[in-house]
Figure 1 (cartoon, rainbow, N blue to C red):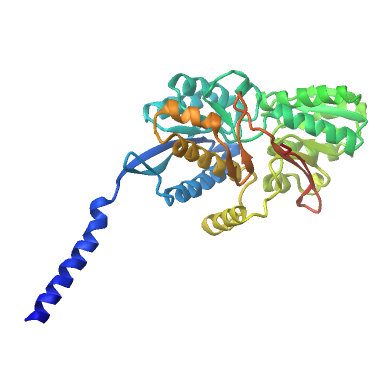
Figure 2 (figure 1 turned 90 degrees about the horizontal axis):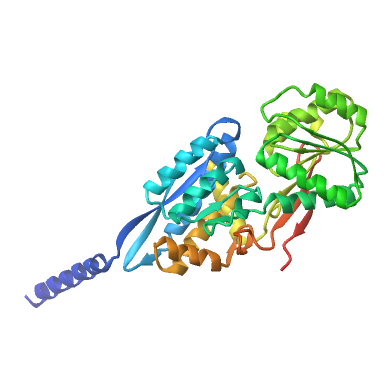
Length: 383
């Protein structure tokens, strides 16, 4: 009989012990993060890579058991395709505001991210641009606007310095694709070349939608440059370099940000050999965090991560870190925390200046050798 009572007591004790954690478990609250990127069209593959990296970041954050006021926060992406189109971007921004997102990661294109930024500013929502590189984005003076990548003026200056000082470019031609990104980058590049006493032998613009380079190439042939800079994206840069070789123009092509990647190599083929481009960030970190992310990305999606994937991951992480620091989901408190944040991310130490620009950004110069992008030099990052 005593044995039976003891067994009943043990059973009740075990039942209470099992039930107790459930009784004190924090209630769960879903927190939406708006994510805007092109998921179709010419930049669709880039946008997909960005979203995939963000998904991994959200999963990692949800393992941290972040709690506010006794509620466990479960983060969730609200992903929208902005189609690299400014009008679509405005619709996406309105949708995010109405959906009460806690912050927005986006947009990929400067021409989309800049007009959308006013909507986020009016709503007091933090916007972290994972690739809006035009300096104009933060020059608007919006306290809500941050960027996790360097801006184009910095990149263009470093590119020009490398071209003149390291590549010894003397007769330089400059082209752009008439976009906010391409034209702005090319203008700053050309200005820095002049400051460094380099010679600009040709300066032209072409539509980002054109496939007819004949008039431009005839002028380039006559100018006889020893180097050609193009402010534009990878697909058009690849077509341009093929046409340069068809016109027997042997000058190496120097690309703006957004050139480095498999797409350029595939489209340019052998004509792309020797192409140089400067991109934000380190070529790779050797730390455990970077290696684990790279491994997880490959395992999950069956492909190598894109160049901007670590920035996308860090953008999510920084937003979550600001929420933890603020101990609040109130937009004003999150915004204040973003201006104070110091976060050790995949891409390095992350903090922002008064404009919302990345402090002490890092760049890497790449060159195509034997159909591979190889890092040549890391620039910046000094405290």
